[in-house]
Length: 621
Image 1: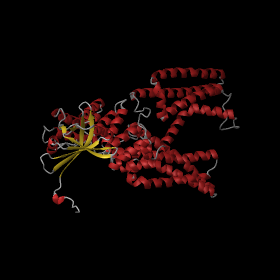
Image 2: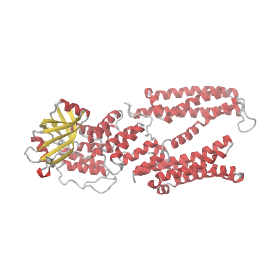
Image 3: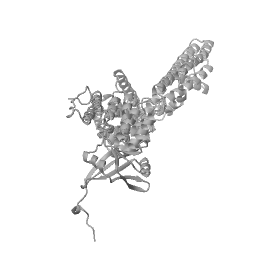
Image 4: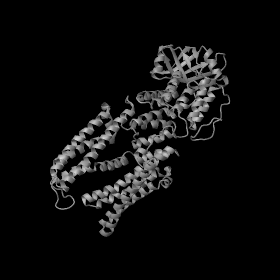
């Protein structure tokens, strides 16, 4: 028995019946990969390659399996090398092109090559779902959501229950961002280098904002608490020098300044952090330069003039910008995307672990939306001193009911909420707050002020309790190192589900009689498409049949030009021994300019017999 440690399935994989057959060892490697035993799979793939060093029996299969095993082991350079060898052996194999594209995706600076290989795989096998999924994954990683959505839909038209296409299609509706959102995969630079630049920018922003907040507290204490106006102004005026020192030190660490504009454009929160830091610096300078003799009376006493209000606002920005950024991020993350559409796609993926995780996180985003509505109502009522229009908040329970009808039963929402009681509590508290606030507005309109006041107070307390539930759940997830109730916990499907990707599928081979027919026949016909329509060209004979089943033809220039436009061709041969047997090989034609041959990698082999007289269609005389 062949077995591996860990994985999805602990049952051992039976060894090949013929230990000298490389194709059987490849089948064992594929079975081990399906059970998530990459080390054992790599050993089996190596056995196959050692038995067949020229890959005559398995064509590119052994190298593709070795590449996939290397990738799952995190050995990306070796995965690329094995995939490149698979493409060299079978340049017309869509599975080899897809494997190379998937391996190149993980290598810094080679994203464009990965996309080119994925496009070739789609061109060679548009009927297969996996090349479309790879195309969608590459677009999703770059934030090209419409293109990714179109690719996943193409895959689902071919295989409706493809788990990767379903889950990642759901992520496009949420406008998911990968962990390194600042880095464009198409950039010819290592993401670790842009990551260092990002950390330097984040450190600069954080240090400057903390420094200015602490300095402003000290300046205000000296000015308003001890009456040291001169000391406060001089000390506050020296702080920008410290800002300059920090800026010069972190600027030296950034290094990749040519990529910084692109990083700021791609990463919303990095750009926001840098922008607000610059605003805080300007606000600090204005606050120190216009220090009033006493604190403006905002909460008590006579109303301040416009200058006092402006000064207090700028001072609040310097002191509270961190809290403002946190609340803004929570709200933007909650309201970004279309979670109901995403939940429907996750539900269609079935009982997959990645889908379950994304469902839980998406429901927390929904809870954030529900929470934000009563909070906005309370704040608006406080500013406008008008509660009656809060009747609109009663729509929240209706919207939740509509969302449940759309995706709740398929999700098994009851099971999800039972597994995460914090999520259930957050949703219930926020929905109850919306109901109470709406009821308060309704009864106040009817003249029942006392009952309305009680409901209003209860409705203002419940969102705070819901916030405490969210904070508790977040701290618990952080402490345990588990996925938290925030957008960053969403993950894309990369090899999830029980099925192996298409790049691990076996190649199409030729039987002995088909190989003999192509080797000895002199009436071979090549069918292809050109701008005028389908064409058939007699090529006389096949120059050679490779050990892996690859056909090598000498064809006219128009066939070469047609293969460049559409490499999908068919080669027809009749049995040279005069029997009623015929064979058709449908495959991908790639021109080999050095040898002057068309190399055709088989995708499908059709064998049949010519009909006899009694099987022919009757003619009218």
